[in-house]
Image (cartoon, rainbow, N blue to C red):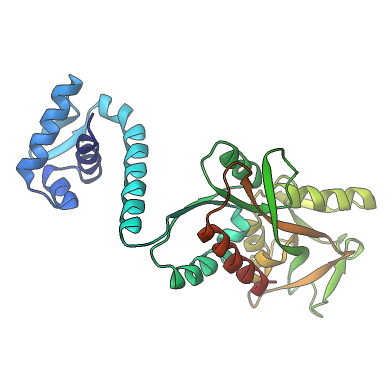
Length: 295
């Protein structure tokens, strides 16, 4: 299939008609019909059933669509990049970032960066630590920003900032709003468990285990944001990173420093054989500033 075949196939699949596809592509209906007919001739089978102006995908089209969609998205990215280069911009930043940074910190950093470099494109993946590392090693992203990660051969680490874990709690459980809480003070509380969430959950679990303290945990999650929302619903306390806690505070919740302190690094990783572009390096400065404002 040619690229134009892919564009027309995608547009018809999304819109469900020749008319809708023509509007999406800003071309005439006869042009869309001609390209579709040519694609079907090349493939040797029909892609859509025709019924009173409506087009529904055939079984063959349904099998093909996931791959067509992937190629179409890549084509859009290439065209966007080419347009930016033509306008004097400097490229695209392919970024994988942990969800805890994706809700508040990342949008703020990108907004600040694009106010200075409006033509730089972003391709974002919001994934957990292990998936971010995998995306980096498989060349699916240029830069991975995540919490404390193991040292890997061929991967360069840049420490963006240091963070700490905090206890986020329903205000009704601690009306005096303490500024610090220890494990001993959480024994009688329901704890939203994040033990399977990656390095931070593992860090918290090791602290609890080494203290020999049994905490009650009837709800387990793998996303810090969900843990914070559950606290807001009054379902328990959680031990999470400060940025997530601060970004999700409400009149019903508060946070306290976890004692003794549990600190970790926020790191940016890239492959040693793929140095960061100047724009990626500039973006990290805005990202660091955004993270620091949420601490």
